[in-house]
Image (cartoon, rainbow, N blue to C red; front, side, top):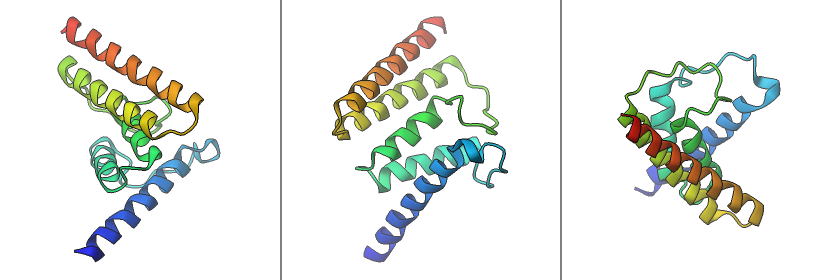
Length: 130
């Protein structure tokens, strides 16, 4: 019902804030919470974009996790097959496209479209190399 939806929406906002806080340079050496692992981050980011589809940061969070952004420190990434890596990069590209659609500033739009194209190009490389 409405209360469940409201709680999910609030939880997604808190998750976005916690994720952003943990990415700050002054938090680099801090211990990470129990959910700071690949399966939990994947699940959390999928739920955050479901619960906050108009939040640009939700799409950027999801893209960063799917593309295993190097600034996501202290995450033990499991090895993927080239097909899995390509699928993740394609989805990350779609996330950047959605962020670009939601952006109001031209520079942001252009940056996220560029990142989307990079992800899609890299996905194609994985597929061709498989």
